[in-house]
Amino acid sequence: MPTSTRIFSDASRWGLLGAIFFAPWAYGATRPWAIDWLCQWLAVVLGFRVVALFLPRGGSRGGVPGLLLGTMGVLLVQGWWMTLNAKALMDPTMAIFGPLQPLAPHLPGAADAALAISWTIRLSLMLGVVLLVAEMAHDSVWRVRIWHALALAGGSIAALGVLQRAAAAETILWEDKAIRGDESYTKSFFATFYYHANAGAFLNLGFPLAIALTLKSFARPTLAWQHGLIVGNAVIYLLAILLNTSRAAQAIGLMLFLAMLIWPARKLLAFAWEKQRRAVLAGAIIVAAAFAATVFGIGLDKQFERWRDTQAQLAGDGLLHTRLLAQQAALTGLPDAGWFGFGPGCFQVMFPFYTGYLGDQISGFWRFLHADYLQTVFEWGRLGAGAWAVVFFGGLIRGLLKERAQRQERSSQNLYLLPACLLALTGVALHALIDFPLQIASIQLYVAVLLGLCWGWGEVTRSSRRRRKSDEPGETPIA
Picture 1 (cartoon, rainbow, N blue to C red):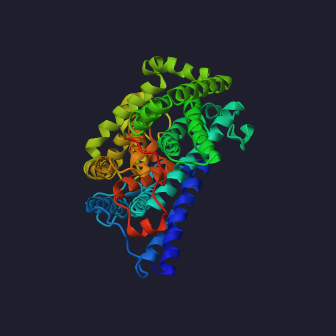
Picture 2: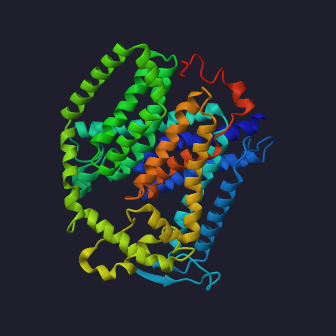
Picture 3: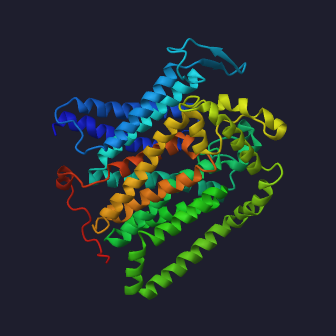
């Protein structure tokens, strides 16, 4: 590859790794300014790749599945058409719609032009990230770099959350409680996220990758300090998930932990147990004792008190009961949403029209539904929701097929990384049933990266084989 082409291509790839670290630290990309910065960052990243495409030998070295390209085309056409054909623009101060002159009045259009264009831009960039990573997934060197970036960036957020809980912080460490002035915020924040469930969903995306790195460090010779850093990172993830007060995130996190032990780790654990049974037992006891002393020393026992309130919240006027009522109200709007929906991001302005029958049983401003799949149908209609399902679940299925086909290959990427990607996506898919993780920009970015790995997973290119000394030198054989 010519030098000029490599410069632009590598700039896009390194820029993506930078975005992986930036997004969670910028308040999880939940604030408007952080979302804008992340979108501008991704636009530059993808712009570098587009420039490389027009330079000599700048085309993709790995084939992107036609199904993915076709489905993305459907989403882009629908999203941008709904945006350009928007019917109205809502005035947020007066809460009234100002009519617009659409391109085709008799064809579907978004309910609010401002929301539609901002969300269409963001989701278009996320689809671009899927394509970029699908190309990178054919290079084993970049697979490993993405693996480390996702696991370590999330681990840094987990460490901040553990530190805040240990210090009994009432706000994010660098914020002033008096300035914030929101009592509900002091009960729900975690790390850089204002809402603990978003933080939990984010941690569950990186947790399987951190465990996968730990398995890799045990399966091959690793320097002591590297081994300690990798193992410590996984332990901090587990601590953070348990200390976070989101019950859904805790349940899913523990499920992912057990799934990693049962799936990719089982042969390694069986091999270690057969060869060094006493050492494994002693190590497990020491780690369990240290872990228990740490978590109870910083108040883990208090976190589980929330589980006792679950039944009460499902009854009466509890929070969970209110969310179920909101989902029922959204269901009444689906016939009006039809095939094309109310437009990307337009849930918040259309939802109030379907809650009147509930009276005072539901109140407040609902930006998200706490049910991602239902909100997707509400905004994108049956056609768009089906296309998004192909992108997400199609990536999962393709990754699972690749894992089965390459299971006998001894590369740690096939043994640990790909199963970790599949489990991470499964975790966020479960969380999306009862919350809105897929509406958060930082989580969208991580999901896009993981989907890109699954869609693009295949044999590594010759160039990547020449660049690496060996895929996994000295790895312990596991039969």
